[in-house]
Amino acid sequence: MVKICCIGAGYVGGPTMAVIALKCPSIEVAVVDISVSRITAWNSDQLPIYEPGLDDIVKSCRGKNLFFSTDVEKHVAEADIIFVSVNTPTKTRGLGAGKAADLTYWESAARMIADVSKSDKIVVEKSTVPVKTAEAIEKILTHNSKGINYQILSNPEFLAEGTAIDDLFAPDRVLIGGRETAEGQKAIKTLKDVYAHWVPEERIICTNLWSAELSKLAANAFLAQRISSVNAMSALCEATGADVAEVSHAVGKDTRIGPKFLNASVGFGGSCFQKDILNLIYICECNGLPEVANYWKQVIKVNDYQKSRFVHRIVSSMFNTVSGKKIAILGFAFKKDTGDTRETPAIDVCNGLTGDMARLSIYDPQVTEDQIKRDLAMKKFDWDHPAHLQPLSPSSVKQVTVVCDAYEAAKGAHGLCILTEWDEFKKLDYKRIYDNMMKPAFVFDGRNVVKADELREIGFIVYSIGKPLDPWLKDMPAIA
Ligand code: NAD
Ligand code: UGA
Image (cartoon, rainbow, N blue to C red; front, side):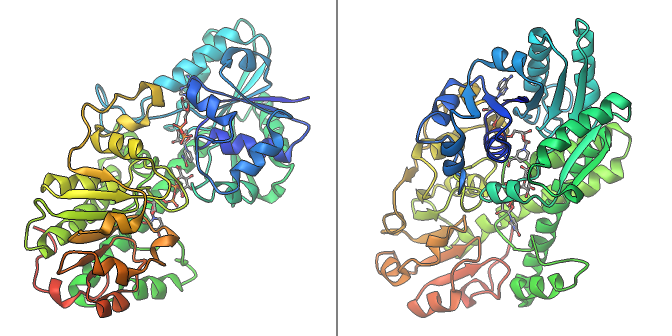
């Protein structure tokens, strides 16, 4: 029986391995992690991550050919194929601080593999890593090899949270990069055979190592660039009276452009877009390509601009001050159908508002109070470390309360901001909300989920990203 071990039981390692176990009953899959609480949760009824469809898969395979364990060394030693799906945070100090990937967790995993292995291994990069990381990993493994043969493959993951199971069941492509030697090609074939259990062969792309590593960074950069492009347009739409949804629709009808990823928003979030682009920028700079680096920097700058533009719209609409005013925040996760808050635009918006002394009442159907308070008190980039190694919040944010429904959040509020596109926010009784708010009552829709006309009928002043402006906002500056 082929044995697979995955180091890192996170958003990628957990779902990916669960799907491999489901689709390949003849393969034994062990998912290991240094975080005891994560592994305990994977072995319980309350999985550590919320992902539609995941519970059923885990329940059907766990204890049969899918195991979650903290006995990292045992499972690594026994495995034929080792996936490494550990954190790759942005460095916060030293060379490349604020841009380069911190490979501490990767390096310690590689050293541990070298220490405990007694048989040949295929080591698969599942984490997103800088191009040429495989070379460094190869060096660590071969310098400590004791005669063991290691083949390194790059097999980046393209799943998106909230749709991870669908993405894994029917991926647009599976990418496998390896050495162009006979052993490298044999290793590629072994991994390809795993995916071939359910992925059509023409969707499995095999390349050299560096193309696979770089393609992952490139794919995320291209996706994020589309969002920054449409968000840049949204600012121009507000200034001219165009409607960004109509512009996106018209532009996306061109088959060369396509309709996906053209939704204007308060800004993109998530654990990877910003991190991967910063990483790409750093690699460009290190390779003497400042013009290319500057091109990609702009994607992040526009995203930051979009978040601060949103805060500015709120403050300027509310007579230039939100000091002491209650603002309801609906949605904190970085997108719907996930409880993940990593790099969520809600953090910057909330910090912008509390910076102006607003009182916030936050509701998200999947994010806990503890998580929200940690996020609002955490320093930039600290979130991307294993949970038990993250610095604890020095003090909770005083002006923030977290409540368990939207009506409670909005009660007595001056304004209401929608920051995640949860379906339930489309169906709220906005008349009831209006009746219980201070007047004038404002809605700031950062995801364009509400029907602005209907809300205006009720009496709200409504701001929707990239839409023709409410008369109330017309003469107010878009940004300072
Ligand atoms: P995560 O933080 O959810 O999971 C990483 C896990 O690795 C943590 O549970 C941590 O405790 C564990 N870990 C760290 N060092 C370890 C070690 N030495 N030994 C054992 N366990 C260790 O992160 P994630 O979202 O799953 O992302 C993992 C990688 O995949 C990152 O490089 C990320 O950029 C990439 N990625 C993420 C997504 C996504 O949607 N989240 C998608 C594609 C790629
Ligand atoms: C993204 C990519 O889509 C995945 O292919 C990739 O594997 C993953 O990053 C990763 O490497 O981590 P994810 O971050 O989970 O996946 O979610 P997306 O659906 O890409 O959304 C990212 C952010 O962009 C969210 O905040 C979302 O609300 C925002 N977004 C997305 C928009 O503002 N507009 C859009 O049109 C689409």
